Amino acid sequence: MIVKEKKCIGIIFGGNSNEHYVSISSAKTVFKALISKTNKQRFRVKAFYINKYGVWFDNDQSLDLLKENSSNDITEKYQELTNTEVNFLHNLKFQSIDIWFPLLHGLNGEDGAIHGLLKFTQKPLVGGGILGSALGMDKILMKKIFSQLGIPQVNYLSIQNQNLSDHNVKNNLSIEIIHKLNLPVFIKPANSGSSLGITKAKNKSEIIQALQKAWEIDSRIVIEEGLDVRELECGIIGNIKLSTSEIGEVLYSTDWYDYDSKYSLDNKIIIPAEIDSHFSEQIKDIAIRSCRALNIYGFARVDFFLEKISNNIFLNEINTIPGFTSKSMFPMLWNASGLNIDQLVAKLIDISLDL
Image (cartoon, rainbow, N blue to C red):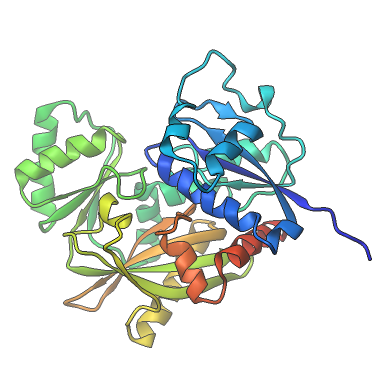
């Protein structure tokens, strides 16, 4: 009997984005899945942690953070900006990696930066490529493409190349927003995740404050009409052929699905969502078409709104590196679709080898 050599999976996590701790939680879940009874027969793991300042750490230190009972105290001891080289090619032993598994949410992760860097190693990676990642992360470009293709979205405006440190600029923009969109509105950084930097604004004063908050994260901003909606989500995996998961719905007790409610224990997740079958088919069709339009493959989570009063479906956004935490929808969707977390992680690795 020929025993196949184990594939070495290189998990990259952390990063200097505002989703640093979400990334650590996601990496813990994936690491645990890779060392499960079944998967450890096929895979071995090396880990590379990037602290908040962009300093890379090698396997031994990184694995400390992925242990099941590791705490934030352990994470904090790695937050010193050292005088060592930040360049990961300098000290890290990455030559044995067979497949990369980047779990960097937000800046330098979902925007395609890490995909471009890893491409030079000439090793496959789990997830999409540079273009799809960049387009999926950038809400303005994503929305412009979907508008051209007639994919349904809520009414929106975009702000670029404006100096929002100038109060007159913010005042004029707030007047334009009120004139062109129905209140309330959601004001979002164009490049951010986990609802960080997003504000629901109901009047001119709140709009001005929200513009400032979003601008502190990104100079490019999206403003969307705030409808009374149900939040529905669909998972995507595959390459040439994309497969869709069951549709899930998030019921939350807060006014809207903000960062705190996304990681709250009070949420109720319903999978499959209690919607008519034609809504499910419409959502799955739009999910595949939108991913194809942006060249997104590997895996993603596609988020939708179902407006309560009209029953219209609107595409919200695509997340090219969705969370893998214990409260994350993506693994829950696939668990309900027949893939537990151990099977899902192995499936994603297999998909990466099919490219």
